[in-house]
Image (cartoon, rainbow, N blue to C red; front, side):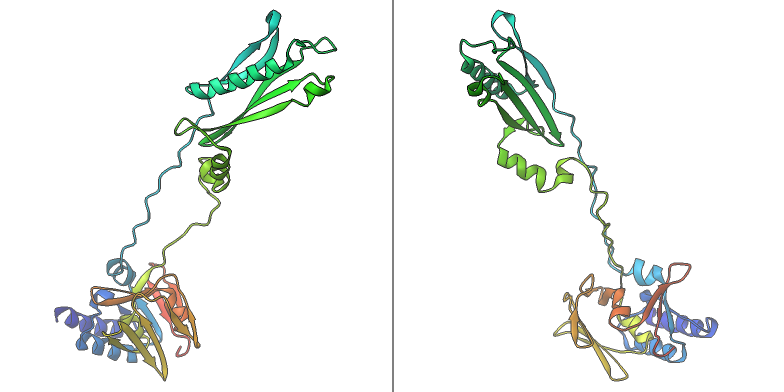
Length: 305
């Protein structure tokens, strides 16, 4: 009852001293008959502009929404790869194939493929133009956490049979686990979420902000609405000049002109006070929502202004 009495004092002082604006703090707004009577009495004498002090109506009593902790995206160095010279008969340099640091099993596979390709040439190790009949090279494509290593094998361009055997063999690496991946897993990891796979934060993505939740009853009453509570259905009913609006706790369904719409959040109840998104007042009650220079919420009822 002390809180209700303080509301009466603040209401009286505000009505006498503020003139064109009536200040109400949510901390003073309770569901007691005294509080309701005090707000209704002051509201009837005040103009249509209502100021709900932000430190009380939003920051103090409204549920505190803590943003999800953010962590910097992990970055990865390029895959550590060194050249291994493939030396043929007569110490002939046939190019290079890759050796991936710390991946012995993969390196054995790559070396086996190079040996296999070299043996295909058989005794014809020299092309018709005097150049080597086979050459090795490779490329590495880094993609954040992942990398693709491509072994390239080319044969004598003048030998149709050998030329047809030219090929590229791809190997896929997960740097995080230092393991070989299948092509399917690599494709899924690098195309499903490219910004994450590359270790780059999606800076172009729109920022998601949480809308402020404000007390419903105290602000509705100062706008001239009669507010009733149905504990059985957890529903708040607002009524003014034959217009009826209802909200149900934890149900994101607001009726506007016979249509059900969703706002950023469903109504919630905390410490016996119902909170709604601030957009409820302009979207559902057709009240102009603004903020003064001190960041206080200002509700202006255009119908009675």
